[in-house]
Length: 94
Image (cartoon, rainbow, N blue to C red; front, side, top):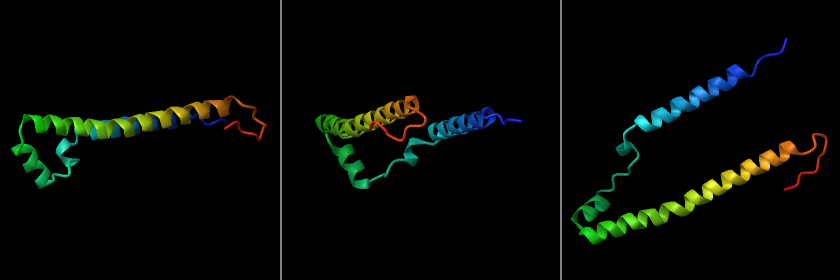
């Protein structure tokens, strides 16, 4: 008698969904460093400085995000390429 893989997959998806909900429910302040110096400097600065700070944060966040998405795409593409290959072949086209 073969065991079904479906219950294991549904448990994994349920655990992933629970983790995603837990991350969204946790307050944002729990993730913040709470640097007192940064907070006081940002609060005391003018409108231009606040806009510059926001732009700087975006500039620092965008390249790692794009790199991560690109790496995930590459891994997914290579995984599908390997699965489509010959089952008995030991040569991988990396």
